[in-house]
Image 1 (tube, rainbow, N blue to C red):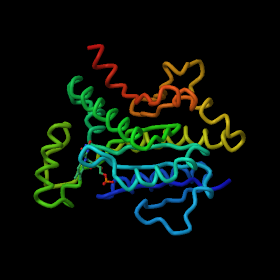
Image 2: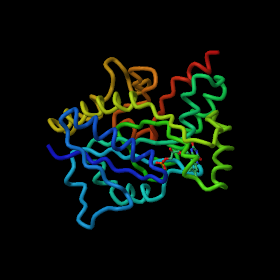
Image 3: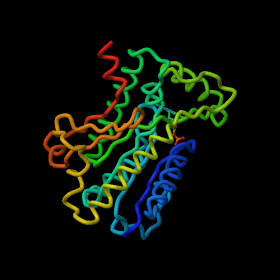
Image 4: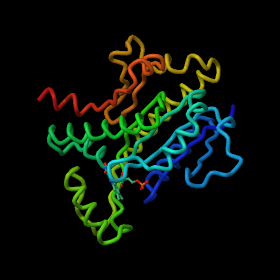
Length: 248
Ligand SMILES: Cc1cc2nc3c(=O)[nH]c(=O)nc-3n(C[C@H](O)[C@H](O)[C@H](O)COP(=O)(O)O)c2cc1C
C-alpha cells in the first residue's frame, strides 16, 4: 500500500510533535507514514503517491495557518480521492476539555473551536472524512516578552495556565492514538473499495443526523457520509462537554 501523508504546519513545534506521534501510531498499524512540513514541500511532491492524508494545522490569532490553506486549495481534487483527516490544534480546545472549568466556559471554548474549524473548512471547501480538534500547548519559554503577555491573556480566557516561567502541554495523546486506530481502519477499507470510505466511518446503527462518533471521553472524531457532507456543506464538531453543559 502507498504511504500515508502526514502533513503539518507549525510555529512553536506542538503540531510537529503531534505529527510524530501520529506517525508512530501509524507504524504500529503497519502503515507507512511520510511526514511533510507544509512549508518545505519538494518540487516533485505529488499526492498521487499517497493512500491517505492527515493534515495538522494550529490556530493562530483566530485562524488556521495560511500555508496549509494554500496547500488544500491547490490540492483539493486529489484530496477528494483518498481518505483524509483534519487535525485542528488550538488552545481553545484545551479549554473545551478542561475538566476543572465551568460548563459555560467549556461550552464557549467548544463553540470557538467549532467556529474555527467551520471557517477553515469554508475557506478551503475541503470536506475531510474525519475532523479532530486537539488541545495544543503554551510554549511560554519560546515566546518574545510581548507574545508572552498576549498568550497569558489568551490563556486566562481559555482557563489555561498563566504561569509563564515554563511551557504547558494540553494534548491528549491517548485520544490521538485512538483516532489513528479508527482512521487506519478506514484506510484499510478504502484500499479494498474506495467508494466505501465514508459509509464505514459511521458507527453501526447511526444515521447522518446523529453520526458523531466519540468512542471514549476525550476522543473528538466525527464521521459523516461524504454525500451527506456535500449536501449539508458542513461537518458537525463533536464536543461531549457541550452536551453536558446544556444539560446542567
Ligand atoms: C501567536 C499565537 C496566537 C494564537 N492564537 C490562538 C487563537 O486565536 N485561538 C486558540 O485557540 N489558540 C491560539 N493559539 C494557541 C496555539 O494554537 C497553540 O499554542 C498551538 O499549540 C500552537 O501550535 P504550534 O506549536 O504547532 O505552532 C495561539 C498561539 C500563538 C503562539
